[in-house]
Image 1 (cartoon, helix red, strand yellow):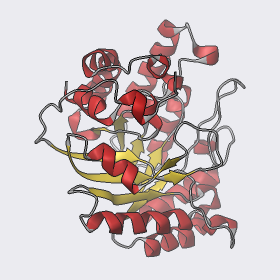
Image 2 (cartoon, rainbow, N blue to C red; image 1 turned 120 degrees about the vertical axis):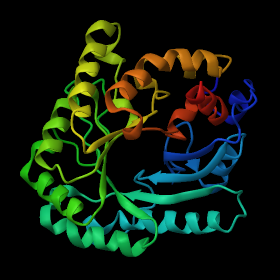
Image 3 (cartoon, helix red, strand yellow; image 1 turned 180 degrees about the vertical axis):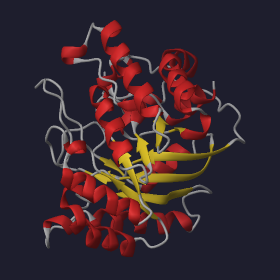
Image 4 (cartoon, rainbow, N blue to C red; image 1 turned 90 degrees about the vertical axis):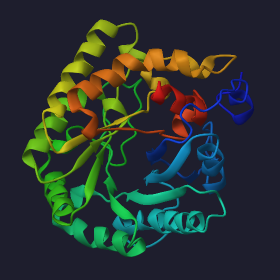
Length: 315
């Protein structure tokens, strides 16, 4: 069966629950990876519009960096500015109303290499110039795992980035400029995030994807141990008042569910039941005021449709 795909997703149809409830989707991507071997090679404004207009009242969205449309020349540290320039254009097109009532990329999260330390300031200033009305912060992924079966997706892949002096110096520049940091890591790294958040308490941090639970490869079949490690990590980071959590990303295959392999896509009731132990634990620890449901589209689109996903969130 296809790995995701709109035709496959259309096999499960549901009416939207509470269709008037206004929603901000705080995490999605745009990209054009036409040469890559991934389920959704391109996800652009018309693709997002089709999803956010599929039944729920999505009023606005937040774009989060995806390492797409970087500048092809110029200083290496400035290449990520190209992505924000690209998304600023898509956001302006959305603001015309031509793609529906929702405002795509009403806020934009880009990328800058925090290992530059104080030298990250000109990069952040260039990102602000590229989007003076929408740029809000950056994501600097630090995903790292010692097992070769687990993909290390960080842009600057190395162990222990959050503890490095250069990274923390760059984070202080970010905080000084009133910008936020999106945190993307795997659950065994959550204690590192707690230490980092305490070292830079003035920085607003948003933990992505319920803290990066991994239940595949070396972590498969070890739920009692793996989930306990995750729960302990979530408890530790939730004790830091400057950390917020995004409730989503659970459709990624690395979370260990089989949804992307089914002949019939999952429905919202089963999805809600499967998500509930993880989502409710995060909400219990962070409380509603520091929690937000995210789509993580199109990454999570390999497992369920946008309409089914928000029905599950509402359930």
